[in-house]
Each structure stands twice: as C-alpha cells, then as structure tokens.
Length: 430
Image (cartoon, rainbow, N blue to C red; front, side):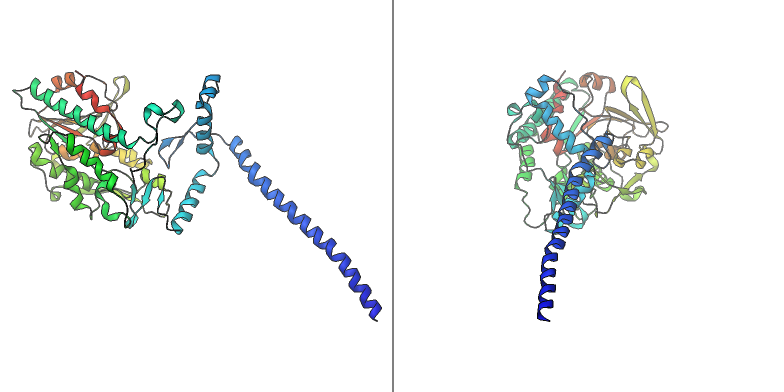
C-alpha cells in the first residue's frame, strides 16, 4: 500500500512541472502578443488613418507631415516638426488627454496644459510660465510658444508708447475736431476671477502686468477696466470654458466706460436678453481636457434702438458679407460659437444704422476679439461704427481716419495680446 502511494506521488510530482511549464509558456506568449499589439497596432492605425487637418476640440490647425530637405534636417527644423506631427496625429489622442486629466484631478492636481481647474466649474488660463530663452536665442524650430517674462513686460511698455504716440498724433492733426481717444484693456480671467482660484494660488506675477501698464500709459486716455470688472467677479462675467468675457461682462464694460467716452449708457432693463446657446465649449475646455465641466451659455442683448443696424464684413478681394444686426447665427452651429458676434475676427467690420439717425456720431473701434461682443452695446449710442483689428488691418490708419472723420476712437486690446504682440506699432506709422 505504501509502495503504491509513493508511486502515485512520484508521478504527480513529475507531471506538475510539465503542466505549470505549459501554463507559463501560454502566459508568456499572451504577454508577448499584448505587448506587440500595443506597439504595432497604434503604429498601423497611425499610418493607415488619414491625417486630420484640424482639431475642432482645440480649435486649431494640426501639424501635417513636414517636407524633408537637407537644410531642414541639418537645422533641426524637420525633426522638430516630426515630433509635433506625431503628437498631433497620434491615434486616440483626445482619449489619452482626457484620461490623463481625470487621473491627475483624482490626485488633487488641478491643472493641465497651463489651465487651472478652478472653483464652480471655471477653467482659468495661467500666464506665469515663461520661456527660458529669448526670441534672439531661439533656433528657427523653437520659435513660437511662450516668451520670457522680460519680453512680456517689454511688449506692454512698447504698446503703451505706441498708444500714447497715436493719441498725441490725433490731437495734433485734428485740433479743431476734438476727437477723443480712449484706451481700455480687458483683463484676463485670472486678473478678475481671483475668487475662483484654488487657495494659496500664486498671482504675484500676474499682478505685475497691470503694474507695468499703469507705469507707462498716459492716464488722460486710459480707462481701468480691471477695477471696473473685478468687483463683479461673483457674477457670470467671464465664460467658464473660454477666455472671453460674457455678454454680461461686455455690458458692464460698456456701462463703466460711458462717462469717459461721453455717452449715456442704457440700463440692463432696456434690453431683451435672448439665450442663443447652452452648449458652448471654449478654447480652455479643449486645453484642460476636463470633460466633466458643464458648457457655457451665450446670450444676445437686443435693443429696439439697434434693430435697424446692419453689419458689413470686409473680406479679402473686396468681398463683403452683410449680417442682419450684429450676429452670424450660423456660427452657433460650429465649435467657435463666440464668433457669432460680428461674424468673428476680421480685419475690418462696419456697423451702420440703415434707417434712423439718432446721434449722427461715428466711432472708430480698434479692437481684438473682445470688441466683438462689446460693439453691439456701443451701437446703442453711435449711428456708425468702424471696427478694425490691427493684427490684420494693413491700410494706413491715418488715411482711414481722415476719410472716416470719427467723433471718438476707442482702443480695446486685452492684456494677453498687449503683453505678447506688438501690432499696435501700426498706430504710429503715418
């Protein structure tokens, strides 16, 4: 009996390693297959799927396959472009970004791509991360992106100088017309909505932007929108998912600047408020990847006094597009719903009262995209408004003013553009 048991145990001990070995081999094969799939399946999809031209979520063009040349390869431009190409065209790119954001937020990391996931569903872009290299130090493949802190401050100083010079030129060229020039800077969301930022969030560097502005701008022409809007930061004055002010924010800007510009602003009760979209996701939503954030609402403030206005967009090759009142409602069906105001960014837009002449006054509004939602309010006090964006307007500004003969000039450039661009230099070129 003992002999039989010993034989059985021996046979079992002999077979077990064989079974375990077979199981281990199958496990190893499965691991290898999974590993190879992770490597080759995305690569196959990458090369089989057609390249995307643009990202609707991020509202930007995507990097395309760069053309190879010996010069580009030697300079490093080709390899830099290839890296951007792989990053932009990677399969399931948005899904990976969203997963990363969710994982980070679960571990109390409330930031992605420089966008803070703040209180009450607000997404706030931060501007205190800077390049370590100046423009002069960057190679051709490194151009673009962030500037150094000194370069941001220099742009503010220079742009203030351009505006001061422009105002002085207008005063000297038209002493008898008494054209008033007003300069206003829409603050960034991080300048105003400080009550939504996480506790102990550093804002010292952000405050220096306006300190630099106050240092160099002529106080006789400057209106401080920061101090006008910040007391309202418990209201819905900036979109939660975008960097622009809401229509309510634009209304408060219109009301606060009225005394400086010499018009009598309408009250909020004078408007009929129409909700035109409840599913607006702005550029910060695309950056942050926080897909649980609720969409924004877009409103139009409509007044009887502006019901006879038409908006003419001056396009390339002298082609014009005319909108009824101030809105391109077809843009509400696109990702960039904010562009429904005045039809979006254009070099020149004309707003004119087609029937009633109430004030017989003209306004030249020199503005970036923040002016798109402000202009319909200003039309309540002007019969004719020309809107130009110096980023794209290349005609001589003084010849344009000579033909227009405006009563007032309002320069409206938000702090982000003021600190990163120098397009206001065009205001000094006679």
